[in-house]
Image (cartoon, rainbow, N blue to C red; front, side, top):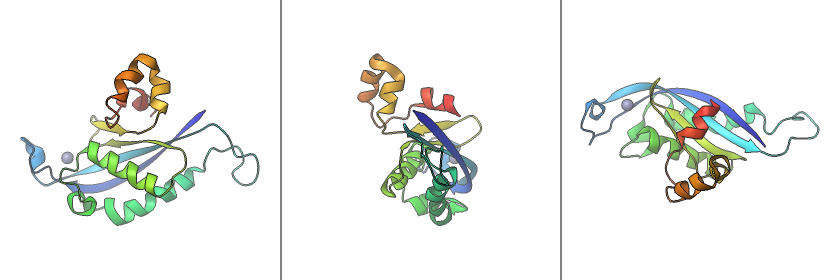
Amino acid sequence: MWILAKEFRFEAAHQLPNHDGKCARLHGHSWRGIIYVAGDALVENGPKEGMVIDYSDIKNYIKPLLEDYLDHYFLNETTGLAAPTSENLAQWIYEKLEAAGMPGLIAVRIDETCTSLCVYSKSKLADFVMGDREARDFSSHRAEPMPVFLTALA
Ligand SMILES: [Zn+2]
């Protein structure tokens, strides 16, 4: 199996209205995102020979989201999320990519700052990587981010 990662960046404002600290104020970040794609076969011939997926094809899936919802926008407005935390944003992007039919998608990571990040996934690959005991624990928290194994890939 191969796991590919493609980075994207955007500048955007957000606000967490119910936060009990400074995130309740309107503020912005230079956000960093990473899309993780897994595949167990390589293209055998043609212009994509030797690839799971062309990195530029991954880029083409995120590009319309950057242009229409993410880059230089107020995320509360464009995503419709009441609290566009990195958790909610990672899930929102994952589900948009999933709905667009992105092949092999396993996770979306969002870095809100240099030291704070989140990974969202629905993939059973997590069960495989984390092992049986952790998989049981993880399966009861299916919607939770799993930074332990995926952040190590970046
Ligand atoms: Zn923030």
